[in-house]
Length: 180
Image 1 (cartoon, one colour):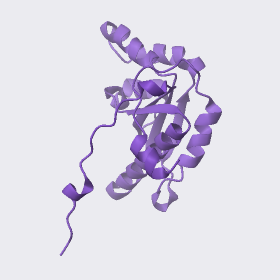
Image 2: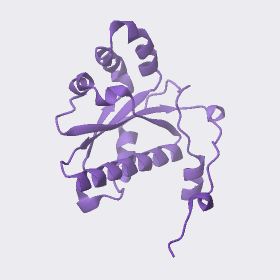
Image 3: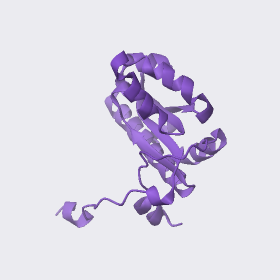
Image 4: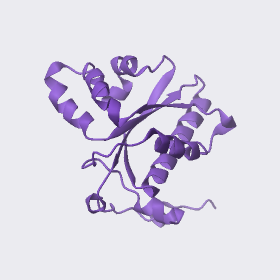
């Protein structure tokens, strides 16, 4: 499959995941390619927390403690949908330029992961939910001071007929100028 085709056909898979487990071996294989993202000074500011399918129940119960009891059932349903999770955590450099370079590199890594996963039939949606910034969630997940959650990647296999249609994109020509 061409890179262009993968980029244009990849979709965020947000629901209707199959119950099939996502293997740690596959996630590591994809990550070992994804880490070739552009990476300023090879700082490699990222680390990964994988929640395998078999540990998802315990993960959900621990994450529910971040929310008030009246939100538990709703959150339990949301957290139960994906087969597994990959949480991407970035070390935060106090220098603005380096922070932005590191954040950009980490985002490029996530995009690489999504494209590689799509090529292998694994659905991914990149989430930035409020708990990404919640100190209680950081404690549950072992996120240290000076680290940031860049994204919760929801992982799961899907039926091809459940893939959402492509949303229209603005042609680059409409947002393109040339310096004269």
